[in-house]
Image (cartoon, rainbow, N blue to C red; front, side, top):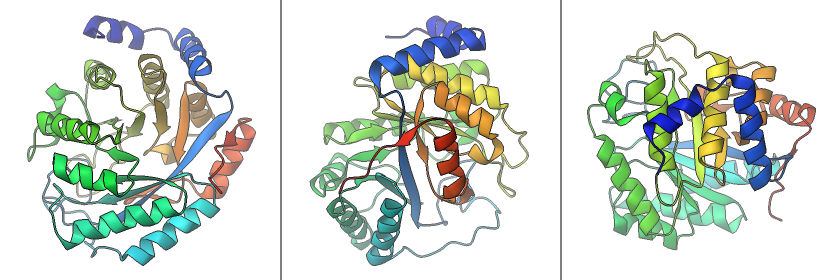
Length: 313
């Protein structure tokens, strides 16, 4: 088990030695030049009863986002097919729910998972909290991964979300793991947290047994009308540092360079890849926030000397 002191000492290392260590760990555990492309689609947007301070989809906030009805299964499968044609190997589907409720909407998500799997892609969903029985139903449909981010440290969490608890998050991750689904869980920096909060979030993830197979590191995208809409941009080197620490603490995990990339220069994104990120979210939108265009990402990957993980036939 990692201690608070160990993780904080790692985080406080000078950047270049930290990068050297992260790169060494990465090369010991992953192909040197491979990056996975993932696409994330919002299948049910807005109207969420949660009050997450960073999110435009919350019904508690006055963002300009208009709630939309759930997409049809055929629309989602068409989007997944396009994502595969563009090089993505994992297709993630998000619904703005507090928790999964049994019924027609959940059944549609199950059908979406089956359709994505039939295409030969990895299927991932993020649907809020779910029970063991619901997790088993998703597993039976072929689901590969469930995303449920911790967001931040336990101590800072109550400043960001009040409609659920940190333990609610951990309980859902337990249900996912019991069903035999891989865990995708990370966090967001730039929400007013301290360096200790950042370290605690990574420490909690790294001390899960087993560790998450996928760890997205997001930077806040401030959205007008949300409580965190006024926050200053994250220092790009803080993003790099978080990825490096995540890579050292979780050697086997895929560390995903996620939301907030539009505020990073190409050089900063390359440093993130050097630090151990071996997956990016690919496509012009991440749920409701902007993301670099596909051609920009392909140029970035090419110029970094990397190759995308090949899609299944």
